[in-house]
Amino acid sequence: MPAVSARNDLLASLRSLVRFESASGHIWLDQHRMMLLHTGALGALRRELLESLGEERARGLLLRMGFVSGQRDAQLARKLRPNLIDQVESFSTGPLLHALEGVAKVSAVKLDIDIQRGRFYGEYLWQNSWECESHVRESGYADDPQCWSQIGYASGYTSAFMNRFIVYKEVECTAQGDPYCRIVGKPAEEWNDPDYLQYFRPDSIAHELLDLQMEVEHLRSSIARPRYEGPLVGASSKFLDAMTLLRSAAPSQISVLLLGETGVGKEVFAHWLHDNGPRADKPFVAVNCGAIPDNLIEAELFGVEKGAYTDAQSSRAGRFERADGGTLFLDEVGDLPPSAQVKLLRALQSGEIERLGGEKVKVTNVRVVAATNVDLLNAIQEGRFRADLYYRLATFPITIPPLRERRVDIPLLAERFIEKFSRPVGKQIRGLSDLAMQSLVDYAWPGNIRELENIIERGVLLTPDNAAIDEHHLFPRAVSASAQHLQASGTIGTDAPRHADALAERVLESGIGLEELEDGLLQMAVKRSGGNLTQAAKLLGISRAKLAYRIKCMRSADKGDAN
Image (cartoon, rainbow, N blue to C red; front, side, top):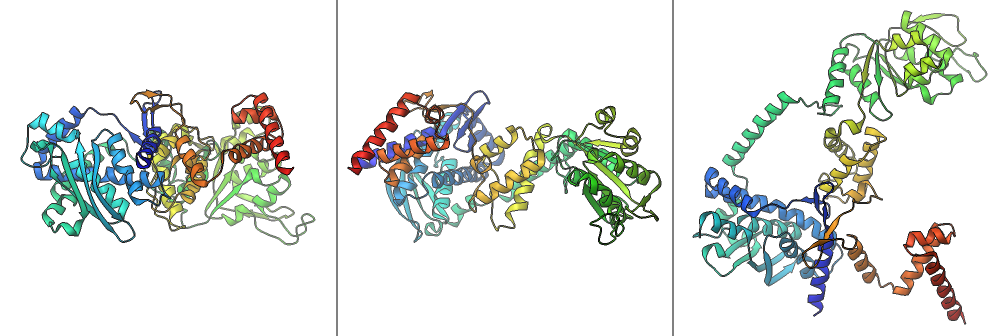
């Protein structure tokens, strides 16, 4: 009975992870995006693979596809039950997932598992296998076992779970007329069957055909929609439009004004412009005009002579002199005070500058690239910015789109940032889970690419080594969209929240009593709300009267214990 109860609890926990979000068109199994597909359509695809590739290559392709699916479910199983001591019970998550996903009903015949010693032997029965039913419907009964993708799944799941190559064989199959499908799994070397193991290795000819097809598709998509890679990454139309303008401006000396919201990467664009122009071997000097006090900005830009003001203990060159021969990037140029605007206009028109407190005119050869998130035309009307300076700076304006207008670029940027941040910490990050990627694409991105970079950095640090970044690693307080869950009856309805079962299981395993748990929740809610009982009651989802009554009971119990 305890084993049956544990299995039912696990099934309930797994069902709570299946979420149907009709509003967005998503079905989720925890962090993995799933689909409901007609087995008839899959069967037709399977038959077409047999006809186009031949039975041997089609078998290997389907088996390897199942292997990858099994590996993913093994990651999910370990995530759901990371601290379970009973290895048999922990391993049973995979067969239950296989059944939940509608592949087959799985029954264990024999299981001998020892992860530490690498020992494994498993024997299972499959009933109602979709692959057998499909094969019989499409092609009739066969002389050989037909559960190829399912064998791949079992092998992939067990190999990932055991951290060694485990291979299953199907020794009975309903597609052959047997009463059920029987599979046996053990370490690959114990089979002593190199011809069979060959199915688990990529087929060179099939892969060459697939690679050739992908290359043709890549060329077609490249012609239709070019993709830019380098320090700047993107494939969206607005990004590529900006890059086209940037490439046009790079070879010349023209002043460029980069327009866009905070965090869109204006300095990265300016760097690219410098690195791909005739001044690439000269200095690139950047200054944030909005970060320097008004009384110091002129000294910072044009330099200062000793004694020009109280704190000027020595003479020093300004940013114009340091950038001589190269590029000066003026970020947030719209924040310049009026006096600095006058001197900047002179420097742009003649190349001449004067240090603060100096009398000697210096001539500099600087290409100026400016950037702002301020509406400069509006600033001109309000008298905050000089019109003549604007027209000098805005000779070649380029608008950089915000991240919400280039969502197609988010996967490319995320991949680049994962690579950037995982290497220094020595982690192997397996990309983003489906739900994590969907959350990134759906997010509003008020902070643009800078915010994306920060979120990916946090995700890399929080994600365990050799795992994928999950949604909660990126957005710790993320609230999933309203969804319906798979109930025990098999219907779809509003079940308990998806983490309720897992939370209850952790509480039970912790040994915390119900009264202690309730007291702790009450005290935490009151503390978090600053003693406001109405607010605390809202946090707990109960009325203020109920909260007050429970606090009174808790205090009475404390007094009784003291007596």
